[in-house]
Length: 55
Image 1: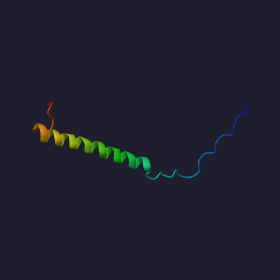
Image 2: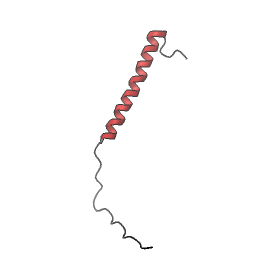
Image 3: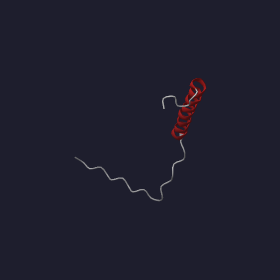
């Protein structure tokens, strides 16, 4: 088999990536999950009198 030429080593310092759309999507998903748990605790407290009725 023929060997390919090796890739040249990068020259200079590596540039740090900017925040991309996936970072924003993870932040939005985390905010939604936290909001959902907060709403569930609020509703349990309102309807059942305790924020954690099983404990």
